[in-house]
Length: 285
Image 1 (tube, rainbow, N blue to C red):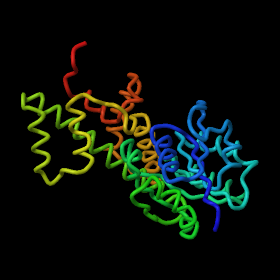
Image 2: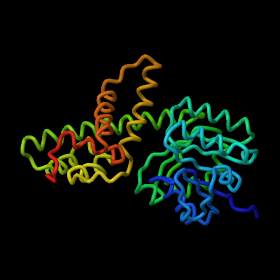
Image 3: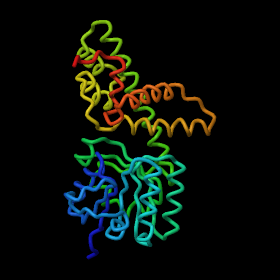
Image 4: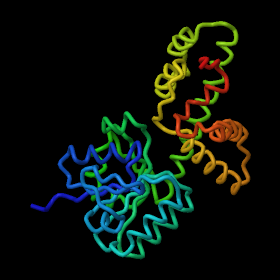
C-alpha cells in the first residue's frame, strides 16, 4: 500500500487555514507555513523550503504574483520530480504562466487552481476549484483537493483557470456594486430594506451571491469572507487584460473606482460588500 500523500499549505489566511484544517480532518500528513509566523498552527514549519521538503502536494494561498514568485524562489532548492505546486492564489495570468515554467524547470509540476467559495465554504469543505493543466496530474492531486472542495472543474490548459476565475469575479463585484446602489435607492425612498430583500427573493435575478450578501449588507456587517482589497486586486487583473486586448470595461472600471476609494479610506480588509457604505446611512457613533 502506498504511503499517504503529504500535503503542504503555504499561506494561512482566511482560506488557507481552513483548507489545512480540512486536510488534517481527512488524516493527511499536513505541513503549513505562513509569512507571518504562526508556530501554534499544527504542522507548522519555519520556511517555504522546509514546507516543500516535507510535502508532496503543496497548495499555495498567497496574495499576489510577487508573493507567489517569492515563495517559489524559497522553495526552489527542494523542488524536484514528484513534487507538485498547486497555485490556488488568484494572480495575473502572466504570473501564472511564468511561475509554471519556473516550477517545471526544476522537474516538479504545476497546476493552475484558483477557487470559488469564501470563508464559510472553505470551513465546510465546499470550495470549487477551477483547474488549468494536465488532466493526469489533476488525478494525482485530486485526493488533496477533494479534502476541501465539493467540485473540481477542469477548465483547460495552465492559465485558463486563472482567466475564468478573474472573469467570474468581475461578475461578482459588479453584482454587489449594483446591489449596493439599489439598496441606496430603496433606503433613500423610505422603503424598508428587509422588504427589498424579500422582493429580491421573488425576482428572477435572485442568486446565491445576492442571498448570501444582502442580509449582512442591510445589517452593516462586513466581516470578511472575501476582502475588498482582494476583490480590487482581481478587478485590476481584469482591467489589465482588457487593456491588452483593446477592450473597454466601463462597468468594471466604475466598481473598481468605488472599491479603490474604500481601500484608501482604510476599509480594504473588510468584506467587499462594504461597497454598501457608499449608499446606505451609517450608524451614528
